[in-house]
Image 1: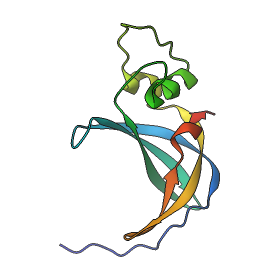
Image 2 (image 1 turned 90 degrees about the horizontal axis):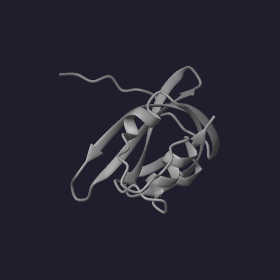
Image 3 (image 1 turned 180 degrees about the vertical axis):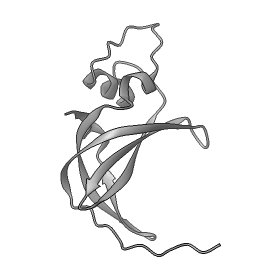
Length: 115
């Protein structure tokens, strides 16, 4: 199978707007929820991911995110993050992170808010 080489897309640090298109749940090594946010970068659409521990409380990162999108956090209540977040337009900040694999745009989790 052949795979076409595509041009590298550089995402500048700073404020961006996009739409939450999907949420993926993972359990290894810990239970995390990954938001997938699609942004337009020039002529291309790019999907960025941002992870949150799967804990909803009034002082958890996921709880703060759901609150910013209008969800009330009542103890004992069950919340479906898919229903609250998928399809919502948002704005957020990114910063470039460099590691041994290269340079990547990283979403600052506490910066995601409704547009």
